Length: 219
Image 1: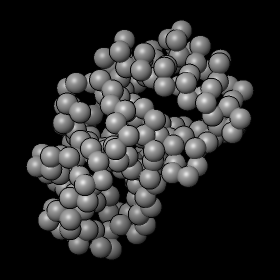
Image 2 (image 1 turned 30 degrees about the vertical axis):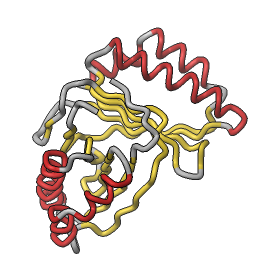
Image 3 (image 1 turned 90 degrees about the vertical axis):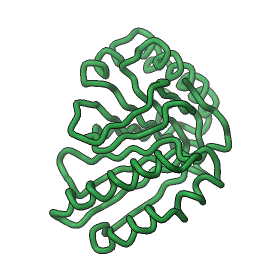
Image 4 (image 1 turned 120 degrees about the horizontal axis):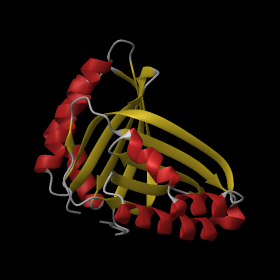
């Protein structure tokens, strides 16, 4: 299922924790995220992962129905408690506001908060300015088709950094590494790669370890 409601709030957080504090951070993050998705009507999904080579480097992606839902979330007791608990644990927390370009996920709610075999990619792409429209057309069509034909793709969200339409961030959640390998070998994906390779100025792919992934599954 896809949701291209332009009111959607889509955020990426780059979170750095103190050395040896990952477990404390993760335990607090787990409770905060599960509670938020469960009781906040406008909080659709929250996804936390970390770099495999460095437990201090963490990513969080959040999806809210609209600005009012986000405002309600940050004012909620569980979020304020989380912030207090993380004083001294989180040493740097950078937020990147994203303009939604494609928001796709399966219609089954995610509720993953224990060790798992998910394959999660965070793809950052800089598109040549003269090819922005071409890239948007091709990538969104490819993502929508991939989500329809492969139930092993649990979620794919794509956005551009606010004020920087040439900088794309794509968040991909696959059921397993095998699903990911099948996805990139698919002829449709290969056509997308061939069509867009000359439009891309820079590309970085970070494969991360899934920690907490929860959503309502019905947005």
